[in-house]
Image (cartoon, rainbow, N blue to C red; front, top):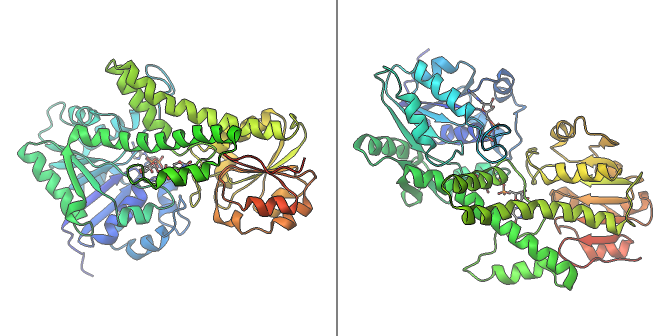
Length: 461
Ligand code: UDX
Ligand code: ADP
């Protein structure tokens, strides 16, 4: 047996939502590179080595099966992989701090720092270290300071290469990215490191889509991209509130304004609020930065995007309460969808968490259904008081319910037999379409009292 000689060895520290898919696509497109994804969690690594991946992402398993064991490996042998690697991607989690200075806003950098120390301890030759995790502006400096501290003669070149992949479309976002952003120092060694990373992407990404900037612009652009996207959602959600009281229709308004090419049509869907691991975290991080640099007006502007998202989730619950005669005590509600968006099992910061907790506070009984997120939903609501069942089958979830709250727009909810569902429910039967993805007129004709979002209700009462 001959051992394949690889052109370069890559290791990615952190086998999560970012590390796993990103490295899979790199391995798929760069057969001349050895790509190893490492993690402190043995359970995660075992899952990546099986066909029951730790995350649900359409198209990912097939891509992993194509390269796993050839040039793509998942391992817990972090120290050895660091020692052998030429390029080290850092994709550990960077949650919002829940304690001390900056609590609730600043990024908790403990996992980044632990990783930096481990790299320093095990590196015996020069390395390129690539920040993949979203971290605050100038974090590369912290990383460099730790890596170059003490008497180590090894040289580290830090690059920023933020991830713009969205869950559910992660594979296509990586395979055909709008752009790949690489931030580096302008020094000769910084430029060589940048070009080394560019060589990887040039295996499948056209040159004109590779954007190079200085380190700080790259770090900041990641936060700003997410802040701008979230800002659009909060903006349209405020208009949804206005539509509900003026008989305007938010879908029509979105369409009308989105046709202006200066505005653009994407990210203008009103909903129960944005979720996911990035938006809230990144905006709060931006707010913290602005406060740190004494820009209170700028901080207040961005903080309002998050405040309006909280308002939107509250509004959705209030609408349910008001429509259902101002009491939910003992009423059964079927919750359609718990993931923060379709095509993922991820429930981090999902609006469903807040909404379900509020509904339980109103003492509603909940039957939660979701095709991929029920395990995570169980974990999110662990220890919360109230009657909650987790039900695979949406028809069963709706049986005997007084109302349906649709929170995630899974395709399957558009294909259900709503006559059958209506027949099995308590009357009057309500449906709160938080994503405007159902045929409201048809539901109304079946007999439902229909509450779309950002449109007047279709009510038989
Ligand atoms: C986001 C960014 O899009 C991605 O570039 C970055 O790398 C990670 O963060 P993600 O959080 O996976 O990706 O999902 P995204 O598609 O952006 O949706 C985020 C939230 O916004 C979801 O809860 C979604 O339901 C909501 N949303 C999105 C709306 O409510 N309306 C819209 O029009 C679009
Ligand atoms: P993201 O969405 O940013 O990818 P995840 O939480 O999905 O975040 O993944 C981060 C991964 O990083 C987790 O699997 C976690 O176990 C791993 N991790 C955290 N700290 C370390 C560390 N010091 N060394 C190796 N892996 C780590």
